[in-house]
Image (tube, rainbow, N blue to C red; front, top):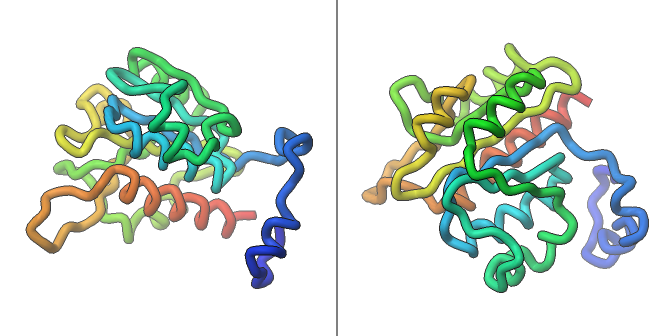
Length: 188
Protein backbone atom coordinates (compact mmCIF):
# COMPACT_ATOMS: atom_id res chain seq x y z
CA UNK A 1 0.00 0.00 0.00
CA UNK A 2 1.16 3.52 -0.64
CA UNK A 3 1.22 6.50 1.73
CA UNK A 4 -0.93 8.94 -0.28
CA UNK A 5 -4.10 10.28 1.35
CA UNK A 6 -7.09 8.20 0.37
CA UNK A 7 -10.79 8.32 1.16
CA UNK A 8 -12.78 5.32 2.44
CA UNK A 9 -13.78 4.26 -1.06
CA UNK A 10 -10.20 4.38 -2.36
CA UNK A 11 -8.91 2.52 0.69
CA UNK A 12 -11.45 -0.26 0.15
CA UNK A 13 -10.47 -0.51 -3.51
CA UNK A 14 -6.78 -0.92 -2.55
CA UNK A 15 -7.53 -3.82 -0.19
CA UNK A 16 -6.50 -7.27 -1.40
CA UNK A 17 -9.20 -9.75 -2.31
CA UNK A 18 -10.07 -12.47 0.17
CA UNK A 19 -8.42 -14.93 -2.17
CA UNK A 20 -5.13 -12.95 -2.21
CA UNK A 21 -5.05 -11.90 1.45
CA UNK A 22 -2.85 -14.83 2.51
CA UNK A 23 -0.20 -13.66 0.02
CA UNK A 24 0.44 -10.37 1.84
CA UNK A 25 3.81 -10.05 3.56
CA UNK A 26 3.37 -9.92 7.33
CA UNK A 27 5.10 -7.42 9.57
CA UNK A 28 7.60 -8.66 12.15
CA UNK A 29 5.13 -8.14 14.98
CA UNK A 30 3.96 -10.96 17.22
CA UNK A 31 1.41 -10.28 19.95
CA UNK A 32 1.14 -12.44 23.07
CA UNK A 33 -1.84 -12.16 25.41
CA UNK A 34 -1.20 -13.23 29.00
CA UNK A 35 -4.42 -14.53 30.60
CA UNK A 36 -6.81 -11.92 29.22
CA UNK A 37 -10.36 -12.68 30.28
CA UNK A 38 -12.44 -9.94 28.64
CA UNK A 39 -13.62 -11.07 25.22
CA UNK A 40 -14.01 -7.48 23.99
CA UNK A 41 -10.32 -6.79 24.62
CA UNK A 42 -9.25 -10.00 22.91
CA UNK A 43 -11.44 -9.22 19.91
CA UNK A 44 -10.13 -5.67 19.69
CA UNK A 45 -6.54 -6.95 19.74
CA UNK A 46 -7.44 -9.44 16.97
CA UNK A 47 -8.68 -6.46 14.98
CA UNK A 48 -5.44 -4.54 15.58
CA UNK A 49 -3.39 -7.62 14.68
CA UNK A 50 -5.19 -7.73 11.36
CA UNK A 51 -4.83 -3.97 10.83
CA UNK A 52 -1.03 -4.06 11.15
CA UNK A 53 -0.62 -7.44 9.42
CA UNK A 54 0.94 -8.94 12.53
CA UNK A 55 2.75 -12.21 11.95
CA UNK A 56 0.96 -14.07 14.76
CA UNK A 57 -1.19 -13.71 17.86
CA UNK A 58 -0.71 -16.06 20.81
CA UNK A 59 -3.41 -16.37 23.46
CA UNK A 60 -1.97 -17.84 26.64
CA UNK A 61 -3.00 -18.98 30.07
CA UNK A 62 -6.44 -18.54 31.52
CA UNK A 63 -7.90 -16.72 28.50
CA UNK A 64 -11.03 -16.80 26.44
CA UNK A 65 -10.38 -18.06 22.90
CA UNK A 66 -12.33 -18.28 19.67
CA UNK A 67 -14.83 -19.47 18.79
CA UNK A 68 -16.55 -16.96 21.04
CA UNK A 69 -19.42 -14.69 20.04
CA UNK A 70 -18.09 -11.62 21.87
CA UNK A 71 -14.58 -12.03 20.41
CA UNK A 72 -16.06 -12.40 16.92
CA UNK A 73 -18.29 -9.36 17.40
CA UNK A 74 -15.54 -7.04 18.68
CA UNK A 75 -13.00 -8.35 16.17
CA UNK A 76 -15.51 -7.74 13.38
CA UNK A 77 -14.59 -11.16 12.04
CA UNK A 78 -10.84 -10.48 11.89
CA UNK A 79 -10.29 -13.55 14.06
CA UNK A 80 -10.64 -15.57 10.84
CA UNK A 81 -7.83 -13.58 9.13
CA UNK A 82 -5.24 -13.53 11.92
CA UNK A 83 -2.90 -16.46 12.44
CA UNK A 84 -3.40 -17.30 16.12
CA UNK A 85 -2.61 -20.10 18.51
CA UNK A 86 -3.49 -20.97 22.10
CA UNK A 87 -0.86 -22.09 24.60
CA UNK A 88 -1.52 -22.90 28.22
CA UNK A 89 1.94 -21.74 29.31
CA UNK A 90 3.16 -18.33 28.22
CA UNK A 91 6.69 -19.35 29.21
CA UNK A 92 6.73 -21.99 26.47
CA UNK A 93 5.73 -19.45 23.82
CA UNK A 94 8.20 -16.79 24.95
CA UNK A 95 11.06 -19.27 25.32
CA UNK A 96 10.46 -20.52 21.76
CA UNK A 97 10.40 -16.93 20.44
CA UNK A 98 13.59 -16.05 22.36
CA UNK A 99 15.31 -19.02 20.79
CA UNK A 100 14.30 -17.55 17.41
CA UNK A 101 16.11 -14.32 18.44
CA UNK A 102 12.95 -12.24 18.86
CA UNK A 103 12.87 -9.13 21.04
CA UNK A 104 10.36 -9.68 23.87
CA UNK A 105 8.63 -6.47 25.00
CA UNK A 106 6.21 -6.61 27.93
CA UNK A 107 3.82 -3.72 28.35
CA UNK A 108 3.98 -3.34 32.12
CA UNK A 109 5.02 -0.93 34.83
CA UNK A 110 8.02 -2.38 36.65
CA UNK A 111 11.17 -1.22 38.43
CA UNK A 112 13.12 -1.39 35.18
CA UNK A 113 10.43 -0.39 32.69
CA UNK A 114 11.03 2.44 30.26
CA UNK A 115 8.46 5.01 29.22
CA UNK A 116 6.93 4.43 25.80
CA UNK A 117 8.60 7.60 24.52
CA UNK A 118 11.96 5.76 24.83
CA UNK A 119 10.73 2.62 23.08
CA UNK A 120 12.00 3.60 19.60
CA UNK A 121 15.45 4.27 21.06
CA UNK A 122 15.52 0.81 22.62
CA UNK A 123 14.47 -0.84 19.35
CA UNK A 124 17.04 1.20 17.42
CA UNK A 125 19.78 -0.19 19.64
CA UNK A 126 18.62 -3.82 19.68
CA UNK A 127 16.69 -4.62 16.51
CA UNK A 128 18.25 -6.36 13.54
CA UNK A 129 16.69 -6.75 10.09
CA UNK A 130 13.94 -9.38 10.03
CA UNK A 131 14.01 -9.85 13.81
CA UNK A 132 10.51 -10.31 15.27
CA UNK A 133 9.27 -7.92 17.92
CA UNK A 134 6.99 -9.62 20.44
CA UNK A 135 4.54 -7.48 22.39
CA UNK A 136 3.24 -9.10 25.60
CA UNK A 137 0.02 -7.75 27.08
CA UNK A 138 -1.38 -8.75 30.49
CA UNK A 139 -4.65 -8.24 32.30
CA UNK A 140 -5.41 -4.83 33.77
CA UNK A 141 -5.92 -6.23 37.26
CA UNK A 142 -2.61 -8.01 37.70
CA UNK A 143 -0.66 -7.21 34.54
CA UNK A 144 1.93 -9.33 32.77
CA UNK A 145 2.87 -12.40 34.80
CA UNK A 146 6.24 -12.58 36.51
CA UNK A 147 7.10 -15.60 34.33
CA UNK A 148 6.61 -13.48 31.20
CA UNK A 149 8.50 -10.52 32.67
CA UNK A 150 11.44 -12.78 33.51
CA UNK A 151 11.65 -13.81 29.84
CA UNK A 152 11.23 -10.26 28.51
CA UNK A 153 14.09 -8.19 27.15
CA UNK A 154 12.40 -4.95 28.17
CA UNK A 155 9.26 -3.67 29.87
CA UNK A 156 7.59 -0.56 28.49
CA UNK A 157 4.95 1.49 30.28
CA UNK A 158 2.55 4.28 29.44
CA UNK A 159 2.42 7.08 32.00
CA UNK A 160 -0.82 7.65 33.90
CA UNK A 161 -1.22 11.21 35.14
CA UNK A 162 -4.80 11.00 36.38
CA UNK A 163 -6.44 9.10 39.21
CA UNK A 164 -6.83 5.76 37.39
CA UNK A 165 -4.03 3.27 37.88
CA UNK A 166 -4.24 1.54 34.50
CA UNK A 167 -5.40 1.79 30.92
CA UNK A 168 -7.65 -0.66 29.15
CA UNK A 169 -5.39 -3.41 27.77
CA UNK A 170 -6.60 -2.92 24.19
CA UNK A 171 -5.87 0.81 24.46
CA UNK A 172 -2.33 0.20 25.70
CA UNK A 173 -1.87 -2.50 23.05
CA UNK A 174 -2.87 -0.08 20.29
CA UNK A 175 -0.22 2.42 21.36
CA UNK A 176 2.62 -0.13 21.47
CA UNK A 177 1.53 -2.06 18.39
CA UNK A 178 1.37 1.05 16.25
CA UNK A 179 4.65 2.40 17.69
CA UNK A 180 6.23 -0.93 16.70
CA UNK A 181 4.74 -0.72 13.22
CA UNK A 182 6.00 2.84 12.90
CA UNK A 183 9.52 1.73 13.83
CA UNK A 184 9.44 -1.16 11.34
CA UNK A 185 8.13 1.13 8.58
CA UNK A 186 11.01 3.54 9.20
CA UNK A 187 13.43 0.63 8.71
CA UNK A 188 12.02 -0.41 5.34
